[in-house]
Amino acid sequence: MFNSLSKFQGSKNKKKGNIWQLFRATDFESLMYPSFTICRILALFPYQINGLNIKIFKPFYVLSTIITCVNCVCTLIIFYILNFSKDDESYYTNLPISRQLKENCYLICGCLTAVATFILSKPRMHLFQTIMQLSSKLSSETYQNLSRLIHAKDISFLVCLFVEVLIFLYHVGDLLTTFLVYNTMIVFHMDLLYTNCVFVLDACFKQVNDNLMNLVAPVTNDESHNLRRTYYNERNPLMELKALKKQHLAISNTVRKLNMIFSLQLLVTTIRTFSEITFLLFFFVMRWKIGMTVNNVNEHIYNMFLILAMTCSAIKTGLVIWSCETGKNQAADIKTTIHSVLNSTRDIQIKRELQLFSLQLMHHKNVFSTKWFNIDVTLLTAVSDRTFAFSLCM
Image (tube, rainbow, N blue to C red; front, side, top):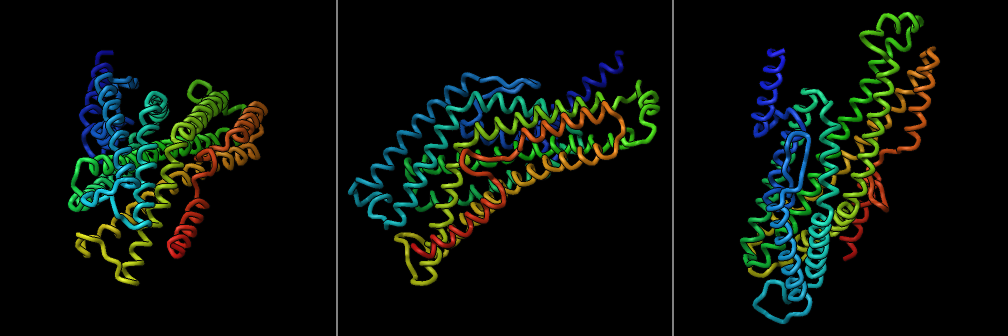
């Protein structure tokens, strides 16, 4: 007993020690540690994690409230200067119409995302706790595979965004611009955080499908009743199937909560990304066709800024859509596996439970979406076609 207790404490300490290590995640906290750290720096993570419990940490919550209020005030000031002020010394006055449209879109989308992120802090906390409990059943190998993808993604986008911000602040370095950059970073990292949650749920769906496939051998055997007696003490396929059905229901409810909480953010992100790629592509084409110049800006640096901004936005959008498409396919594979087992087994109780599982799948589509559209490959095709068309018509 004492040996098992010491082993448990050793493994617990080992998990805590691996929190800071990249590409070696052992649980949900260590998997999301880089993303949570960046969000905490941006005052987007007013929580405290203790085991499987996540609670609101009041000092961080107060700080997040203050920063959100100051951010909204600065956004309104920039909006006034951009559209109504006639001060020739400001960067935001006397801009071309295309630049004014782009900056207005940035301001509105960034402010909406910041306010929505603050208002939905508590529902998002409960969502994180639910995902943490669901992912606690994942294997250590799955966590390591996820950490290689998630940590590499977060670090790569952080470096690209940092370079993009430095270029922008080099030419427009005032206090108001700092909050404009802050809005951009909020939108960017909330998208990455959403993608990380989708990847974890994808792994949970895959685990359910894999466990269903492992049930095929004892369930589809001709001597199912004898096998049930043999494996009664070691393995009960019927109880395992009920547990998998319950686990799938919990994951499906989590997907629904994820869609509800991040719905406004995804809508704003789609509009912002669509306008960003459209305007940046338009600016790049204008500089290539007619040699359009920007005052007080080095041409080579500005070209590099345009290319980097377009690349980051396009890759981020593609990554979000790819993760959602993968999750939808993983959920669809469960339906295929259930019908395969159902057509092979002769056990009446197993058949009845599989039919109930199939009905459950029919009531849960498990599609990652907003209120108006699904996040899948069709969205990527529509956005790319309309972006190119708008950039040529401007």
